[in-house]
Every structure is written in structure tokens, then in C-alpha cells.
Length: 117
Image 1 (tube, rainbow, N blue to C red):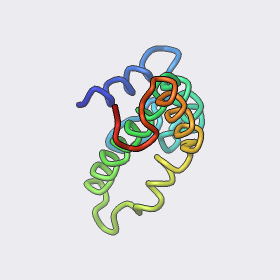
Image 2: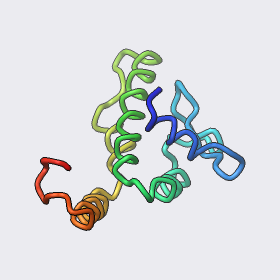
Image 3: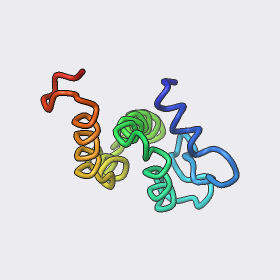
């Protein structure tokens, strides 16, 4: 697994963070709801507060892996891509993340374009 996935899983580890995904069904280990459940949706932005774009990447990787797992469990008709996207990515406050990332780039002296440092 990549560094971002490991950081995300580490953020959900421990007794205070029971709301982690149970693969291959992608249900919450604590409450049994579809993961990310409501408590995980509350916890994840706080865990990734110093790097909010990493949250988006982490959830994108989870979406990819969940699609593979859920398709293996039920290939016909397979998981609905729109439903999975809404479940994994649709709740993330991207406007706020983009504003914060741009503000940090500006504060660090990076150009305002997508050219990077």
C-alpha cells in the first residue's frame, strides 16, 4: 500500500478510531454501516487537517479499491459507479480544501498557476 493509504489507515487505528473499513465489504467495523460512515466522515477531515488534499487522494484510492472488492463480490450487475463516487468522494468539502491549498501556496511563495514549485 502507498504512503497515503497507510497514513489514512493509521489515522483510523486505535481505540478512539474504531470507524475503519472492513474489507472486502467496505462496511464500518464499529457501526456496520457503509464506510465511510457518518463518524468516519467526521473524523477523517480532522485527521487530515494538516494535509486536506491527501484526504481526497486517500478517499480516491479507497474508492478504487472498494470498486474492485465490491465487483469481485457481486460482478453482476456490479457496483454503481455514481453511488460509490457519492459515497466516497461526494461528501468531501472540496471548495474549502482548494481555498486552503491555494492560500498555503500563496503563503509559501508558490505561483498561483498549476505549474507547482
